[in-house]
Length: 132
Image (cartoon, rainbow, N blue to C red; front, side):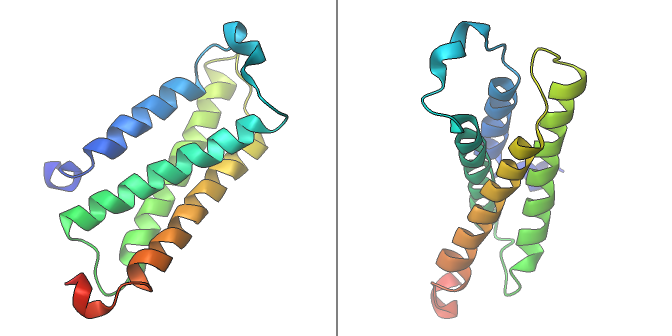
């Protein structure tokens, strides 16, 4: 287990920060929204960075191989599940926050954006000889 988490320190740190920020009481920060939908943009960015850090950790660990789905599927499942868990926590535990399907959609959108970037830059953009 420790071998799997060895290169995921940044990912775990970011996930804890996202968990804290998504469940923080926002009364004192009501005016913090710059425009309507800013919250959705933040969710997308949070999960884009989370998934990108997960891909980076997998790459450093050396589990990226010839078949990109070996890395993409676990990263996608973990990241989207984490987004769902955050929304469930907001719905059931931190009742001062509201769970929102659009937040969950934006979480998944950020993950999909990271997958696209991973495919573009690592799988399709770097010749196979240079990856090894």
